[in-house]
Picture 1 (cartoon, rainbow, N blue to C red):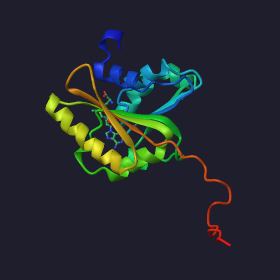
Picture 2 (picture 1 turned 180 degrees about the horizontal axis):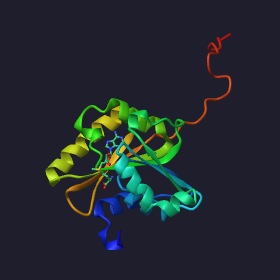
Picture 3 (picture 1 turned 120 degrees about the horizontal axis):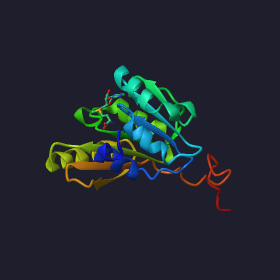
Picture 4 (picture 1 turned 90 degrees about the vertical axis):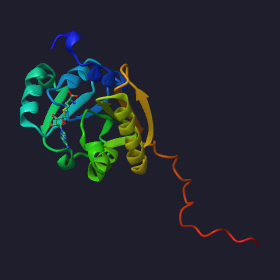
Length: 191
Ligand SMILES: C[S@@+](CC[C@H](N)C(=O)[O-])C[C@H]1O[C@@H](n2cnc3c(N)ncnc32)[C@H](O)[C@@H]1O
């Protein structure tokens, strides 16, 4: 795909991710792997895994990104997010563009997976290109509610076109460790 043919939503989504060269990135619903290829431009020692439940999409993504896969920078997995097994907190960045499952229903299992897969301090980004600006806003509000209920801290940003919206969800960083010995010890009595 020529540079000027890359859809604006994908270019904008990848820019929002602020990817560090050593980042571990997961893309859900990677389709034919266009955004996956863009992410590779930011990586050096990092890695991106693209998952998609469509075998046709995964095949196309594999062909498009053959060089990145051969050098070990990118990988692909065929299947549904609900069935994707990985260590908790394995990813610094998790993103999805135009993947409807997160807002067409309660998506409890999928949203819980997002929280589990992202490391504390890591970020999930869900981007939608809606048919119009009102729908984009409705979807953003719906996602704020669901992601907040899941434990994320969310902010939304408007894309270069009013139909484009991104919801950024921070998995809160782990708090400071408790002082040693403070847990379970009975309060000291005044003498
Ligand atoms: C509308 S396409 C978007 C593709 C690409 N992200 C883009 O914006 O061009 C949605 C993709 O997400 C995949 N998908 C939808 N729900 C999924 C799920 N629960 N798990 C894995 N892939 C999913 C579909 O197979 C499809 O390839």
